[in-house]
Image (cartoon, rainbow over all chains, first blue to last red; front, side, top):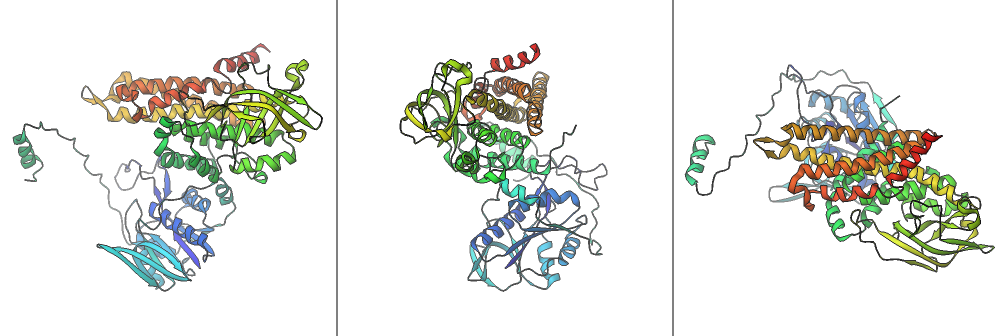
Length: 245
Length: 379
């Protein structure tokens, strides 16, 4: 079995979000980039499946400029076998899925994180499955290989659903798919240098959305303390300021 | 001049940071309280390759440079100085000493498992009567033809009980003074070795420190490192490089306390504003930042020199003295910034302050570093 894991390059989750002067773009200066946490869990599960046997190769794919290569090499250091980078600035979900469609054909299982932690679009996985015309399952919290057969688990309201699925399959995975992301070992970091990172030119596709502007949410107001004997004041605040009563 | 780190160096720094912030932080307070050895973390960090980082891959090590080692040590020590010293002794005293000076057979037999971190090592130089003045070794290694007979006591041995491989310095030819000292690889389970009780320390309580007694311990001839009489020179050369490890540990203790002080100053309010907005505190933090940056640069300079096979005697002494003194100063100020909270264990800075003190004492006190630096000025 060959697995493809889609990797999005996102700002570290503790990044202080700022926009450029005209509020039209995210200000990337000083930002530290990481593997999208959901993609990282997907990769972790792929590695677990490979270690259990039955998986011959794990490839990772990303749409991005050469600035995303350190992130891809980290994924290689953790244990992916090779990487594909489609050389284009990731624009919207349609654009990214269209780019990935050209390299995602020959895999038995494609794992896509449920969303990326930057724009939270959650569109790429489903679109890519449609473009490839293969089966897909969303909100997957478990993937296993039993006697060569692929099983997936999904969290559903009040329970858990188990499915037996044909290949090729695209699984959109969420929390629960693997426990903790792995830390690369020294040996993996050294080997990452010599693993193939293939750069592919982008397909001629137009993005279908345009970002008009960004706004930061209002800063959270400070907490107001009300004396325990002053229930009247609490009611007044809830009524007049918070307007919940 | 190039102040840029390579992608690999940054990846190692991040890996060490992730492990420290995710795993070490969870039980560091409890291990400090109970003086408990971090066996689980030693195993995990060994699997990641942090116990033999600079050993060449042909001897099962990580093959990384000293700059990467400094970056990793800082991250580990930020959270857990005990784990950092275990790592430092194994990497820069034991593995480095064997990589540089051991015979091929010794490397195959002893270095490989140490580099894999399957076993850890200890470095036995200090004695009850020989600390800073290490030339006067009372432990004797009598030449008995096909083996040496070891007798004596070693003190303050980090990893004393948890190590399987000891590197022991002992006097073979007292008339030759320091030129009569030899260094030996001694297996801990050799008959005649008694391990003293666990030392109840002020800080770094989770590293196990013991005295080790040798009574008629037979050491095979082939376990001597280098030529007859090479032991003192061996110890000095190894300690010279080892200082970079302890300097980086001190740097980590300082920057760990500093990060906590900055975070606390942005949260804690007094007189109607976050305390970082009071200039007396902002300026204090600014001074601390400069000192930490200086310490970091000294550590990295010494590491860079070592990686480029240039002399490191003065550079590593400067890094160690400065970083240790800065660690003491920064952790003391970090406690001050936290006020009453800084004095209770939950906030970590009181522990870091206790740990900082040892960096001014072991692997050459700050005074010994000044001797080394000043001697270079007298030449």
